[in-house]
Length: 287
Image 1 (cartoon, rainbow, N blue to C red):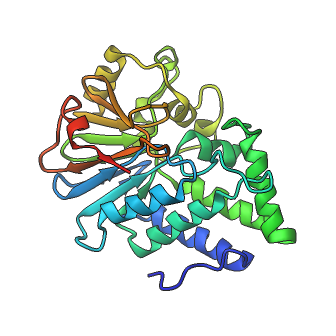
Image 2 (image 1 turned 120 degrees about the horizontal axis):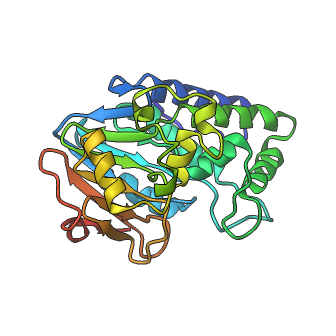
Image 3 (image 1 turned 90 degrees about the horizontal axis):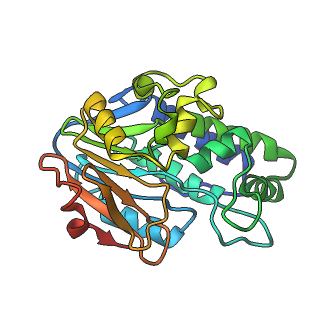
């Protein structure tokens, strides 16, 4: 359990935080390969891209009501690389640390899943939110805060990211992931990737299966239906796309969420009685 917030200027404390959180994520009792499977009961708060919005993170924590029941869960992804810099640096490692603290406090209930910005930070592949190379801006803030120990802190963050699964699913048929592969990439994609441990090749562009899954955008209805059959999914909850209204349903089995902007939303799900994608917008909660 975490009783006191981590001293975010203490390199040793931050390294320890990320390493303990990585261990907790990897050792989740319901994890197999790169997916965590929840039972068909309880409550899941599905979220979209957060991109270092601390006010929305706090609201998500309140809505998740993790203290109220051990059967309350929350899934999080795309936590880093925000648009608001401080002295031309990206301090979103602090949001990642906040999520790591939540994992240690509620190890069976808080579920980070891999997203493309976290993957970019892991591999060093440049990505931008419009203010420059987000990976470099993130690294600049780490170096500014931790000085000579910045590379050790960064390595701990990478270990935490590498521990993240690709998906969270329930026995009742919901699957939460950052995205799905682009349709034209399916010939290279291994749909069994979520059921096995990830390899270095899985993280690598252009044909690594984890890479394709977190970066994909132009998926199709037929492709979604095929993956739904393979994974036994009734409802996909995804992110990775700008959704002006906070939630949209591009296909009959897909809900896409944004949680980072003024119209951002989350979707509470009763795992024993899943809504359809068509019904989902009626249950979405504004942040």
